[in-house]
Image (cartoon, rainbow, N blue to C red):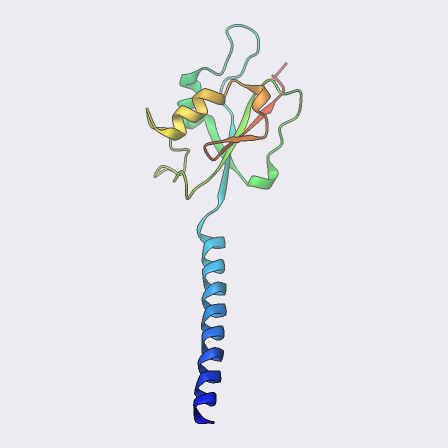
Length: 136
């Protein structure tokens, strides 16, 4: 009988510890990593000379952070509007801006897709691209 009590107590303790650790881990993850979205506010033109250029895209002053669920990019899809990514995958620079560094996966991915409206709402290397209408 004593062995049965010890066995049941061990099972209950294991269940308690497993569920406690699962809740702690889930809570930590939800608060530690956040999707960051940045709207492009730099020069834009669909009439030649076409803007933005690759230099415009890498200029950190051309990006303003917004709350992920508030990004509004009206159609038709013609030019870059915003990018969204997990800050655990691509940590922000010390000024809270997108991590544009020459030759990095982040920079290369943005430069490969910023001028591709057909990629609207698609994700490449963890970066989601959104496009909007050109200004009139």
